[in-house]
Length: 234
Image 1 (cartoon, rainbow, N blue to C red):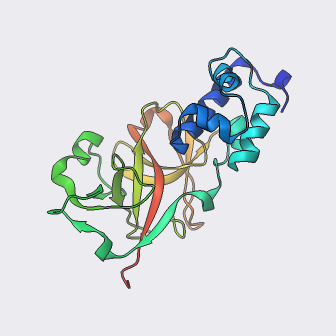
Image 2: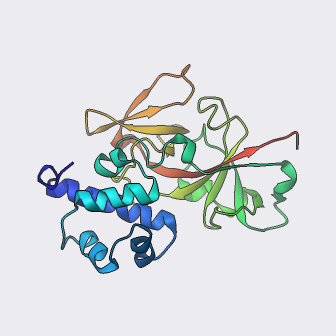
């Protein structure tokens, strides 16, 4: 991709994805600049729109972070691929009961059913335990997944850590989300639709068909940041 092919809207969208990478890396912007081998002032100018997004900038980010260039340039696919989504295996003994509050709270919620809004779903009354895991911020929301539509990435009974989405218009295509629709919740890959008013919800399990929904029908959405496999044999 060359500068002549990047219009102003694409420039803005790429900058938002770079800002997302910086937030996810949990380092200051100048540290991210050091990581990709760029002058911090120049990176700030790119992010502020005072310098255009260039192939040099894109390639530095791709080479030094391992992010997908397709995702960085277009928003399609996933930032790091399915295998890059952080996951960990824990036992039931690693989960603290509701009377002991340590680490990130776990909510007694079935994300595959129920229309309750986020404020009601994540009320303190629904906290049934907590868990301490490196790389999972304490402000995450951890819920249990039921069903096999996302196997083998997410198995029945696994936990997922969620991050609130403040701007539902900014979707990271190919990422896994928990979505709240009119009558139920579900966990799916969100893929781009040829109709911009629609999205495709895709399961990992090939036995499940794609679901096409209107973006306006999505009442709320949270992005999956970590997968926590619960091994009951441990």
